[in-house]
Amino acid sequence: MEDERALLLLGILRRQDMHGYRLHEFIDTNLAVCADLKKATAYFLLDKMAAEGWVSYEQVQEGNRPPRRVYRITPAGEQAFQRLIRANLATYASMRFPGDVGLAFLDDLKPTEAVHLLRQRRAAMLDALTALQSAPEHAGTAQLIIEHQRRHLAAELDWLDEVIARVEAKSRKTRSSGRRASSP
Amino acid sequence: MEDERALLLLGILRRQDMHGYRLHEFIDTNLAVCADLKKATAYFLLDKMAAEGWVSYEQVQEGNRPPRRVYRITPAGEQAFQRLIRANLATYASMRFPGDVGLAFLDDLKPTEAVHLLRQRRAAMLDALTALQSAPEHAGTAQLIIEHQRRHLAAELDWLDEVIARVEAKSRKTRSSGRRASSP
DNA sequence: CCCTGATTAGTCAATCTTGACTAATCAGGG
DNA sequence: CCCTGATTAGTCAAGATTGACTAATCAGGG
Image (cartoon, rainbow over all chains, first blue to last red; front, side, top):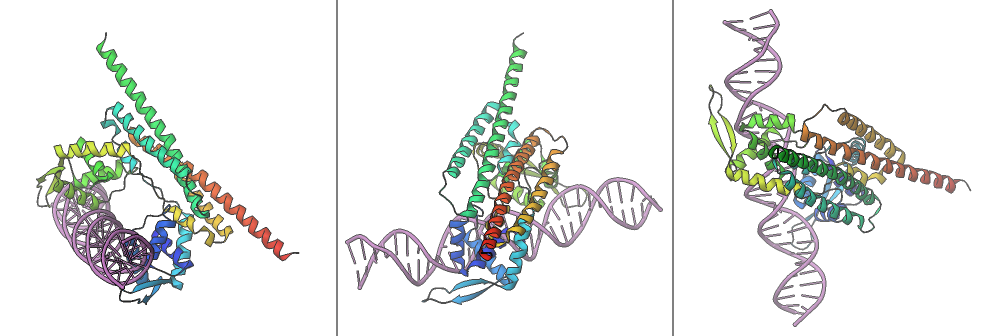
């Protein structure tokens, strides 16, 4: 299990008992900035955490719909939470960015087209950045995470500008050397 | 399939025919900065891409070991590559960082311990940054990606410092208000 | 020339993830 | 009070991912 999803679920259940649907809904509306957890995955993880003994649940029957399971964190779950949050806060996991893969094959495109495409990416990033900046006043902790994303985006924009500049430089060199080769 | 792994595989096969093991090895040693593709996943994707008609392969028997499949990109695969690289370069996918989950539960720890843990994270990030800076002269494109990670890390460090400062500020406030409450 | 541990090459079962589906309940317009 | 579309709640099978495994070949010390 060893990952941040368990931390997420335990952290919420610690504050309040909840059934699967509500849990997912809560994450999707309040914690979407820091995690993207699909409904079915949430149920799967809750099952696993129950098997692990980190949460227990009470079947709640209402009418003749399938019974809801209301989950509650166990002492073992609380211990796991304490361990997981410390591990999460104290360590750093380096990341790969999906957008970098394209960069690895930048040379396979004509420089002019590459620049054109990267400018489109730049515009998309700028949109994302302004969207973040004009975000509604989020609650305390979410604010930290939004600030994180804002800074990340700003750094990425700076970097992208340099990438574009480099490709343009190469494009100019290629063209001028091409002209030199054909003119004397 | 619609993702960056296909782009990665096609981009390599475009330059050279290769069998699965060599392909994975190549990525793991030369493109580890931009993708983490497990061996078994590589084989799985190659199968799928063959089914899709993006690559073909030739069985090569040697001795009595199981025959290797040497993959080659097809015209359809080349088309897919052209489409995928344009999509990848032109768009931006916003990201979530696993480390942010812990931040969401920062208030559940004593501020002093939180600060202590975050300082550990800071040290780990600093290590990662110096490792990047003292990286061996990587080839052209990889350099771009390393520069990306360097900038990302630098921005994250700045941000983390502010997070720590904020937690410390709150810690001081809590302590002094506690003193005020107990002294008059 | 033989033995041993490393490397090459690939497979597989177990686990995880997801979109699509079911089915009951609720809100409120007619 | 009844019908309809939205919401609530959860399940499931298809697809993706991974660690562990097999099994042949190779390098080179004795």
